[in-house]
Image (cartoon, rainbow, N blue to C red; front, side, top):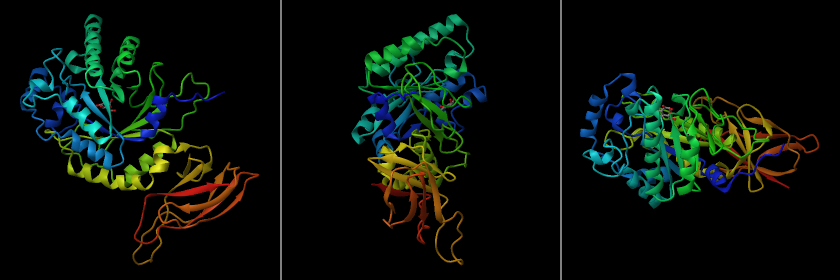
Length: 415
Ligand code: GLC
């Protein structure tokens, strides 16, 4: 069965590879994650008092976009409206629960889009479909129909007033089994934004599931993507894993469970193994600043991305079998071998090293190898290969003392 060719917009999305997710809203002032209103059953009127203190005084979209760019990220998905029902954009009279009705008094989505454009970052809009302010998950059908009209008009504003948008990222359709009138919504989006990506999060427990035919990419929320077998699919659909930097999406001031640059590197590599994008979340402070730890971790991981930009952005999955978590991507006629768990050479007194060195096998490689070398120090690596039976083995040397790339990449040139 043939594998469909990706539409240009989907191919472009795949080569964005690595993006920043931003969860920011009224909940950021409470510092307990973005679900706090629902979990603590905070009455709506009481919760909305947070609008009076939402100042956005430290929100500098351009500097956030610069951080993303300098960290190797090519797109940002911003929560234009989350489940709380509060919009960061000017709803132009549709709702009074928007940033214009707070001390911020600014259209923060407009700032976001222009900050992204100035830094060459592609802006994407997250928009909730589950909206607690409408009780969209439990209300009766009449109110739900009214809600769907409101949702439609809300999204139309985003389609019409901010220029071309990289994609729309919906979330919450999992909260209610219903006819969400997706045909109508997506048709409207395509009429204004023909090249935009449409994503609708299927949520935890339903990773990688195909939804409506207009959907361009499936989601793997907090779960490492598996390679997708697209044989016989009506359309090529890409994949994306979204993941929090700690355990919440909105800032959690008592949440210390942060990912390290090492985790980020391994997760990004793992996503690319499956050809999927990695969308890594940060939760800005109440006033809109990205916290210091996140900034530092993203920058450090970004230094790794910069070293391996060719395979990370352009590498496509292959079916060659490698040991453990190792894998091979292909780009521009070359193969890139991603090595996990490699030992550090040094001295028994100072180096505690897990992992190993030495030959690692590859199965299914029938094209003759010309050379193999580490991308970082260009050291040439020995190999054995029998193209007839497709078996190769590369003799990987350990990290030189003083280095550890976490995932180290070797470039394989073929004849
Ligand atoms: C979930 C949550 C939500 C978060 C999203 C990100 O669906 O409801 O809070 O925005 O995941 O993937």
